Amino acid sequence: MKSPILFSGLLSFMFVFVPIATLAAPDYLSFKTEDEANNIEIFRAASPSVVFVTNSALYRTNPFNMNVQESPQGSGTGFVWDKSGLIVTNVHVIADATRVTITLQDQSTWDAELVGVAPSKDLALLRITAPADKLTPLPLGDSKILEVGRKVIAIGNPFGLDTTMTVGVVSALGREISSLTNRKIRDVIQTDASINPGNSGGPLLNSMGQLIGVNTQIISPSGASAGIGFAIPVDTVKKVIPQLLEYGKEVRPILGVQNPPDSWSQQRGITGVPVLSVNANLPAAKAGLIGISQNQRGDYLLGDVITEINGTTVTNSDDLLNALEQHLPGETVKVVTLRNEQRMEFAVVLAAPDEI
Image (cartoon, rainbow, N blue to C red; front, side, top):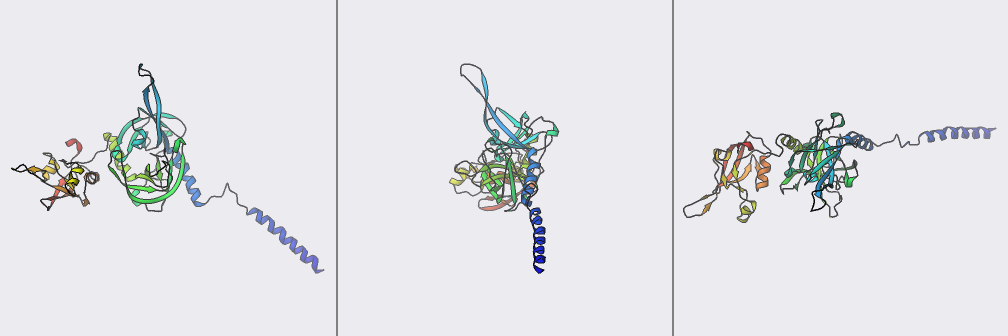
């Protein structure tokens, strides 16, 4: 009589166990890791802000007639800056363009007007006349608080494949890269998020979907992503865009001095930026800086050699320009120089470019 009872209990156990295992089977459509959910959320929110930039040039089909055709000569990425139709991209994306068109996510295409360029920062500002309801600006982050190891997301149009997302981390901070003018772009963000040709001008986002940089360059022997990409920090973008909007170019306050080429200083073993001459009635002259002079025997004598601006070391012209770009016209800065091997300090009130 005991066997049937044990057998019945075993059947009961098997009956209960099977449906529990079946109910526990994962459903891929509803299952996401926290990181996957974050990626999906950011992509959905940011994609409407990312635009396709087409660079076209006009050319003659025959040198003996006036027929002109338009030919695409490049493409890249940009993003919506505000509801007025401002679009940010890289200067090198629109270089030598006769016509630039912007394609929004809804596939509508708009002719772009050039508002301004900052070649030394590889930033360009365009404007389209699309209705405000078609434009979704990106929220702005803060590149000063980034940390190595933080997740970043790049969205762009590599190789003409629109709205592609890649994910990586901040690999390094404070990098320097060369701009189109051979000036150094400083405090650049390095990332291993794949950035390929066509990604240039697109946004680099943090895990909150905020803009932290503008993708601009890669290091690669093959021309494709090798895990070393660079983005212009958003703090630089925030500073440059208002200047492009107001002046059409990047502006910086001035000292009112003329400087020789860096090669001249290097050949003579001079560390710092020599003052070649000072402009009358401008800040440096008013503060007492002097330039190169000539004695009675015809020998040239160094005047002031600028070595520091407000605590920032100056070793060459690029350092000097970068130090000035951190300030506004009307601000007073401490300029440190060497004059006859003696340290000199000057309080200089910076002037606006239009005061020249």
